[in-house]
Length: 402
Ligand code: ASP
Ligand code: MG
Image (cartoon, rainbow, N blue to C red; front, side):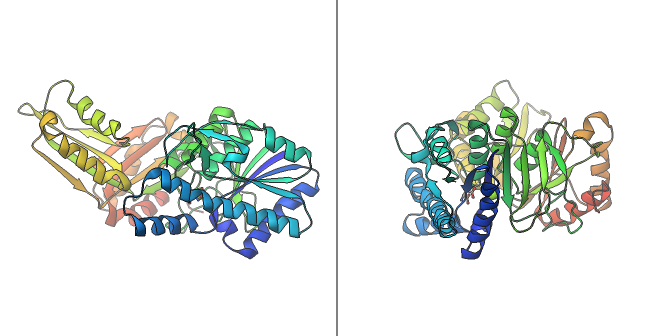
């Protein structure tokens, strides 16, 4: 078997944990498997690099940030190879250049395009454990790029797809995918299985486990994933196309505190206004999420939407800069909002799921600012101060607790 195993920052945070990971990989290797290991930077090292950079230049060039970021993952993989060698097993570390992981050009948010598998194959044939840097890639200018925070998961899935791996295991510091973030909801329960679509929504909505693009890619290439703990031997959660067990109405509840709301008021109620507004944001690469447009009155309307915290200042600046063209009366931004979502494939065939969520929030006297839905998801925007109470109440209302 060819197994791809990915370990996150906490799993390689110190010497003891590095050896723990090394032993787990060696176990598989000694059973005769080919083992490819993908690592993140140790602990909070990526955050430390950001702090170092911003201390020198508050707005560091993105190219230089990526150049800096790559040392984090490079440190983990080389130390891991040393650990394995010291345990008597042959191992080799490779960075994105050495493998050749080709990405799009965008620094800080590149997408993997193609992975050359030749070097890895060659090293595996030589009976080495191959340890690859997560998160990083190389663009057409031969510069380093990175895949966005948490991007090592995507590296692992992409490698599993490129190598036609038999298994892709994502190791983390929790036991798997939970019905809600166990740090926020004490009664959260581990799921045995979840579909790609549900996982994609949960990942995008801030469940904190798995990079959303990794799930997108797993679905696209049919890579079955297992999310499990690096600290114990429990089974974890399988992410795949279809789940065996009868579906619960809801699989999970996610909270995203990073969401901020922007309201543009007094726009002309005529064709092309929404296009102009969102086009100028898109041109600045700003992702917009929940959108709400009011009914037109006296020939004007309001449009509000959410953006992530990291983009909100840029978004406000773009809108202000286009004031003449967009021709609105006022623009406001509120940062103390949070997005609460329920996700479940079961809601496709069951009416009343949204109503149940709204009733639960009403019972808690929590006001809803915006609502958006998809086939398998209901999202509400609420005040951040209510967020923790809301997620617990909704989790209970849908019977997700143990
Ligand atoms: N080290 C990177 C980060 O902290 C990538 C990853 O951990 O997946 O975002
Ligand atoms: Mg992660």
